[in-house]
Image 1 (cartoon, helix red, strand yellow):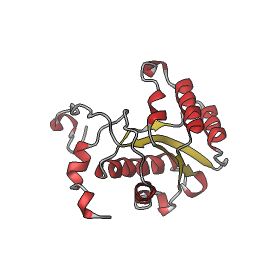
Image 2: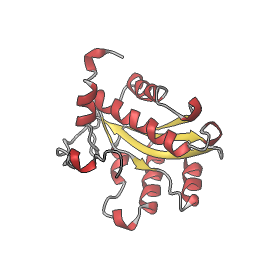
Image 3: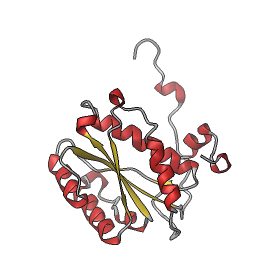
Image 4: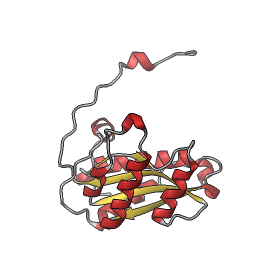
Length: 186
């Protein structure tokens, strides 16, 4: 990776925000490949490397993902519709092959998505992470598989719209450090 456009690690972590508004500027394939490549360096259970990434750029598939997310949105989040994802130049759907996950597909997928989100920030792009499953409603995974042609041994983990930010999200309010540290016992 070219150090010229890479930020200091701690700066990247501290500056990462959820971006839901994107400019019309397209993301070069080389940058998308760089983002996806970083996932290969994420830890996985027994080094199974179970990740699969679907790159969505076609408008019809984006519309289907918007409908999917809005349909499955929990009541608590109904005001946060997923319509914004169709404006992203690319949507990266992180999936995990259960046969290579050693009963840790969800953890493996979330770790890979976190690496991806940090790489997005490092390259000056914006993104947010939306879940693609509900463990209490397995039919949601079946629908995502149908929309994206995902084989039965692979579970979708998250949907990550990526693009050049058209907004600057507010600074995140954090809990005090001493409120989350517990020594020896809770």
